[in-house]
Image 1 (spheres, rainbow, N blue to C red):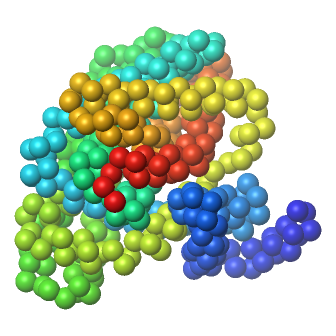
Image 2: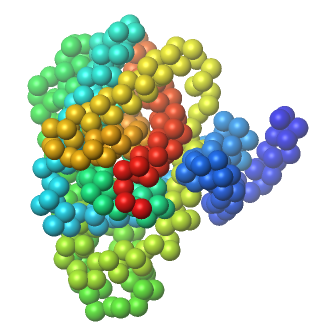
Image 3: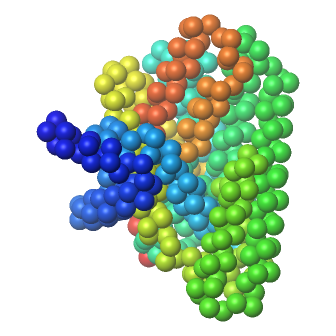
Length: 415
């Protein structure tokens, strides 16, 4: 391996300043590794992630940390397209039919995942404060892999509609749950959090959600006004992509949620515009390269060095297994309570395993929070351990989640 690295590193140093080089090598290597993955009946996105791991700092270093930071703009564009696609599934007819079921399933799986993960980590000797925080973080789910697999399989039906709804509501519920747990843990440790902190954190989340919804509604209305007379697919693509980019940038600049804003925009478009389906069909040619780049970039950020720490391996494995158990059991129980059909009960939970952006964002919130700024070295060490466990779990869940999602969608949806 070392002789190969001795050749690759000088090449990297010559070209690594160029974002075009990074995108190009990720797409080419990602495509071929994705093809290999499909030959062994894995989703192509698993191959894209593995390609990213191979190109990242953990293996060859061709895509190093500085370049990964530059490539995040591609990630944000892809997330905007993914989010608006999710929103397009929320037609008024579907919401009237499935809305209460989606809400029940979402709440039950959030709470059960929190309880199972927290309980399992407590059983293995983790401090109550850390176990509760990790339980709250475990409730987050990443929608990107699920959306891509659904599109690749061209799946449809109540299973897909319910899945879109649950993954869309999951992140908002996770943030609310985390805010309450974070305030409770801070008060329990005596480092400055209180009921006021909970209210301010929850209030901040509420303001962010409200303004993200308003921004998304404005985006959807503007797309409708600018496209309702246009019939050419290329013209639709130019206008809609431009507005997605603009509103994603506005959301990021205002510290709002581009994911939620674009979801709302998609919902407004599909309910307001008579040619909503044409609009989303026009976006379709863009999705393969964007999604390939998105998951390959995600792979470059996975740190294989975490596998060398036996304590992280143990607790991280407990977290991954307990989270999978909580998600699957929670969805099964929620679907049973909501009166959903057998396929939703038995398979939907497997599609909730992927975890990425929101979980990492909550970890960064812990690190940056003034609540723990003056904490003791022991508490600081516990917080560092939480970060490593979540990063390990994200790595594992991003690798095993897509194959499980593909299996579940094949079994549960109409293809």
